[in-house]
Every structure is written in C-alpha cells, then in structure tokens.
Length: 143
Image (cartoon, rainbow, N blue to C red; front, side, top):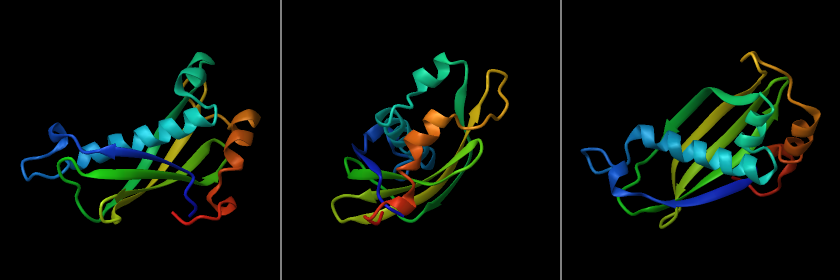
C-alpha cells in the first residue's frame, strides 16, 4: 500500500481513558479526520458533496489495534485508496507513533456515495477521476 496522504497529531489528555492510553473510540476520530482532510485536498470536500444533495457515508470499518498512544505522544495518520467500486471507495489507513516509528493500528474503511434519497449511487466521473490517480497500486512509497 502506498502512502498517499498523512496528517500529524498530538494526543490530548482528554482523549485518554482511565488506564492513561487513548480511548479506542478516539482512534475513529483520528482516522475520519485524516480521510476528510485527504478528500478536501483532492477537491471532494464534504460541504461540496452535501451541496449537491448527495453524501459520502462510512458503511464499514475494520480496525486492528497493535499498540497504544499516550498523553502528548505525536503520531501520523496515513491514508491510501485500495479500490474504487461502482458506489464505494475503500480506504487503507495506518497510525504510527512518530517518536519511535511504532505501528499503532491499521484500518480498512469503506465509504459509499449516496444520492439525495440516501440510496447508494455510482461514483460520479469527476470524483472517480479525482480518486483514480491515488489508488494504492499507483503509488511507489510503501505505507
């Protein structure tokens, strides 16, 4: 999988659970923020899609937790596209702790384009064009 896009963060204390590590649900926010930043960068911003009456919704996500992040630890969330289907886009993501380049988690997220009635609809030609050049198979650098 090629690294397509990345966003750096620092763990905030309010994101920790009673054991002093990032709460498992918070990782979902990190992953979503990175996907949204990536889509915005390539011209598929949430506001623009919504103004058309359509939406892009997460339909499934699989996360494999490998290690924990702690208070004030810096980390990077990486995003790549595995494939583009008729109505779906599959994202591959990783989180690395920056200080020791430790892999924290891997994730696979499926987003679906929806029409004005909330039903799956084909990826528009414009969106397909914007996404196609970022398929992980087209990228040289490993994620």
